[in-house]
Figure (cartoon, rainbow, N blue to C red):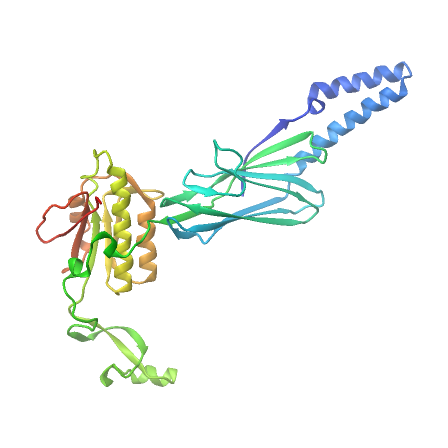
Length: 370
């Protein structure tokens, strides 16, 4: 947590510096004329003003604030919990109000201050060394990479006549993947992407190419048993053999064809959703997949390039790149394909998602327009 700015918010005339000076002068004059009760009243108001301002300022000291999303990665349209924790790590009690403005596409029923701006707020009276938490249930309607890195803290005194406001910087991020649907929802059939497949068994397995181990079952041939690994684990283990002929796909989006269209950005979002759906389908089918798109990405320089691969971590990376994608063109996808050719193995099926269908030789074209 980093404090960027602290400012005093005058909420009462009694806390203004000129008022305190006048109270002090008034008390001196009243004592001189032996008006004890009015003089004591001025001193009391002066002490209240000084203590209130000191209390509200010190309330921000040793205050630990943390906020995070649960989970940190979701798909568009899903709900997410946003948790805020305030901890007073000192003996002096503190009255704190925490407030943050949300992007328009993140909505929450709790803590919305007004209709013009989408705020979350959390107020707490923290006794010495006390910690309080609050969880907001939010709904995110649009994919993207969101950083809620600035929020406001207002510390008040016990009677509410003096406030100190601090602008806090903390990196709280949320990754929202594009919405994913069955590829059949887009009129795509598996054979459109990789051709007909009669079954899921390996084609011409190469016994030299061993990918790993798994538990042996009766459907596997006996020659796949790894006897050394089986002896170590006290259970039959079989070798996973990489096929000499396997399926690999790589996806790109023809953003150049979208620029200039009236509904180009809408089609762009749909194209990213199609790409994410294909990626999830490929992951379920254990098909290696890559991604390259000639656009900027939020938080990272250069275009989106994900080499052809498979696995959970690879799929998380690919979906995160789609979440970070921005509608800003960087050259042509053909040039990016040429620069990224070393990342694409020989025999990979190239899938191009564009606004409308146009025949391209040796390329699978998927129209994004409904």
